Length: 138
Image (cartoon, rainbow, N blue to C red):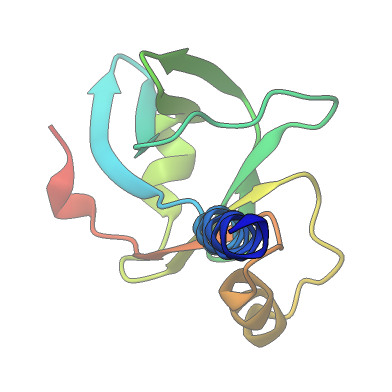
């Protein structure tokens, strides 16, 4: 009887551990939710159903070959919000359809193909956000 109970507890523990590990191995979901111009600034809001990490680094928005790091970060009720502030003239000069990435900290490469590959990796703090669509401006 003790052996049976021990085996059942061991199987249960393995199942719970495996389930938790696989849930943590998934990359955080991130997307652009809003472009909004206010005066001479365009605000790009990025959201996630999970909180964004707050630490010693900063999040950087990459659009084409331009990088923007002036941002405001909030985590509200488990949801993450990043607002990037881009001068309207800089936003106007961005190429429609340029690839958009978010990184936590500096990326060690400027090669767009390498960035795309890095963002596919589960444990790399880099996310592909698609292509710039200025028609989403509110």
